[in-house]
Amino acid sequence: MNPFRRRRPSLLLTGLSGFLFLLLATGDGHAFLRAVKPAADAAAPASVPAAAAPATETHQARRILDQQQFYDEANPDRNKLQRIEEATRHLPYDAVGFPDWMRALREARITPRYNLRGDARPELLDLDIVMKNTKEMPNVRFPHLSHTLWLACSNCHPAPFKAQKGANPIRMADIFRGEYCGMCHDRVAFITFYSCNRCHSVPAGTNAASQ
Image (cartoon, rainbow, N blue to C red; front, side):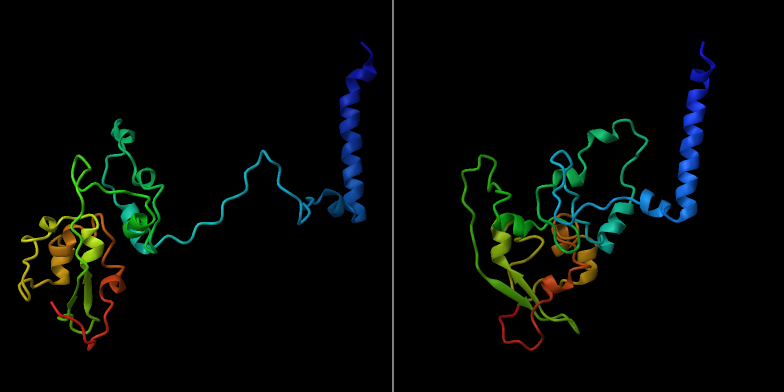
């Protein structure tokens, strides 16, 4: 075997190392080795999808909920359960990071059925109830219309709400415990603790119909 062939790889490596050392020593190495930036107007290759816009910072309420361990991750059947991100991936989200159900309804992303067969019509009621016993907080406006768009009257009356003025001593502590509004909110409907302004929307002293 030709001895030069055995030495050729080492000679090439030696020559390349010397070339790089010379570039660095003369100060031209940085210009030679630096990454080349693409032109500002250069189009990305068709095979490489454009990077998604950076996600906004996750809201505290979402982070707290995501930290809760509701499921046993060691259970081999854990992955058979559908994750919330997959189930709601086509829905708009509110500022807190949870599904915005009313927006989804307005944009026809969901079409609730009013009975199992889907042939019933909703009993709409366009009536706002203003609750004024809110101490230092703004008064609460309860819109019947947004609720009757997909709930029947019997969902709320006579329980948990009596259809009578002053008959429902609602407290935030009760809501947090899952009573009154808390039967839906903080579970499926929006989180009340981080969305005060969505209910407390009427300045105190406003001339509006009371509870």
